[in-house]
Image 1 (cartoon, one colour):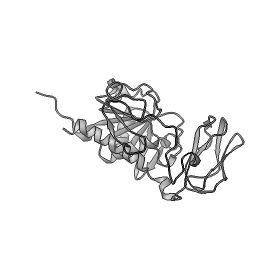
Image 2 (cartoon, rainbow, N blue to C red; image 1 turned 90 degrees about the vertical axis):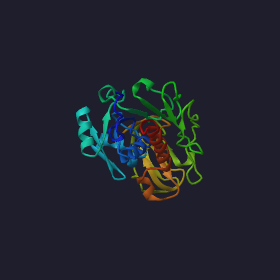
Image 3 (cartoon, helix red, strand yellow; image 1 turned 120 degrees about the vertical axis):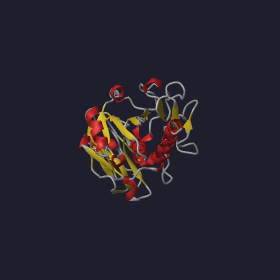
Image 4 (spheres, rainbow, N blue to C red; image 1 turned 180 degrees about the horizontal axis):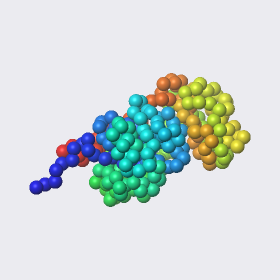
Length: 271
């Protein structure tokens, strides 16, 4: 007899990364009924922390749009989180849980602009988000992450568009809306996410050097207080549109990418 077809709700999906984009993907898949687990580094560097499940590493749990992610330490706790209706997050930069979990789908959502070790052999379906992956060689499918007409598109042959290095345009601004570390050292925030900021306002410090807004708006994201940063690293994000509620909800970009991932999974397993 042929092997019994696996039910969609029984699929295990492992996501490398737990930042903003990974969270958008995990949120949509969990709401669609899949069992999802995310891996993270010991000190996540998410800027849009209010929509990053990786914050569970610091706080034990993180809620995003009604779903709760829970910090876990092993396979038994992963299963326990699923039984509680929560999304497990495990500190595992090398993705060592892969061998124990044996996922049906592996999604590399680190967004490192390069492949940091993901391969076709990791799972029956391996998906890479953004540039750095070649569909058919190191992943089965890639998902376009560059804003534009192809955002969220499934790539079955070849690679996603290369990184432009230019922040996405919001309200007519690109570079101006991003806050960068002026020097290496400890990051100290002066403002909270969702707060109103003005042009030339000092919103953070790195070893006494000010981090100053180039435009006014709302602080959509800012790095967690006390983390070590490198010079030129992104540490904050100003939204000139000024809608505070947007600071606490998944972005249109993350939802589009998540839609592409969901489509890719259903193409393979809903047959």
